[in-house]
Image 1 (cartoon, helix red, strand yellow):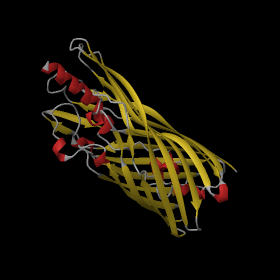
Image 2: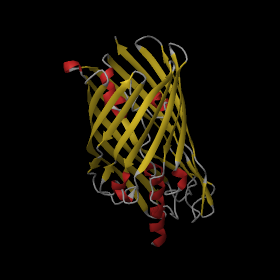
Image 3: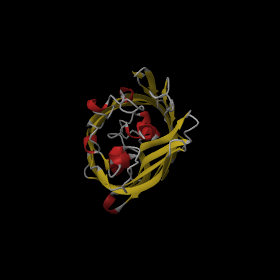
Image 4: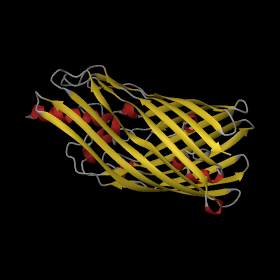
Length: 372
């Protein structure tokens, strides 16, 4: 019985590894990604519904935008678990979309709407022993947004957003020999409010403040949840962010921001984290812009929970640093497309004689059209 319970815990921990050991680092937009996601004070495309709704106020043309985000992040181990029968690889990849629309609205304001994925993870354990048939799981946050922005003065704008956040959680874990048969699929909604401010004291400088209220999602009870903290509830973190963008030269912009994610109220195992972002844009020609950026994504886990014997969870390899490169090309005054690539840099971690590696590769592609 103890062995059966131990295996079940290890199976569940494997799914939880990638899904919740990270903050919500899946953010939309190739151009924003190229800026190292330091986009709150730029916010000049439809991804402003996420980064800073106040940026919509300066986008008076009716426009549409579609974006595809591809993520690949395998977590690998140099050997199997300490019990020597668990998987040595957790493989995750997914393509997640962003779709948005905006148009001029009442009293010269701008209204926008969009749908995008903003967190979670999923995948399957590979190289399993014969007596374990399958271990697959998926958790995600799908966001349905509507935003309204208004330019108050030439220098100041404000934006408000409303998010309906759909949490989805699936897990399948089967082992006939051990008598394990976990198979569930649950979904629930929570709601979040956003406020964004943008102030441009001089022509070359833009500053921003964004506050997202966070949300409580009342999910159906699931004792076998892949994250035990989320067996009965899911809390989406409150976040705030400040940032600026400055035109150092005529064709060169530098942007930076810092944010705090209040993840301590989402789980007793998590602490609040700060994220730092910097990015640049070089406008090489009238049609081509090049981007380079960096951002951090630190480990959420409190120190007292880091030393976990089983699985890959709670290890310092989740202290991530990302470098991004990107480009945007304007085909016409109406049509443009963007592409960016992001790669993580983290040190392998040795734990109980096993070395763990966790690398992340992200690709983003945008296409947008303005009805001039």
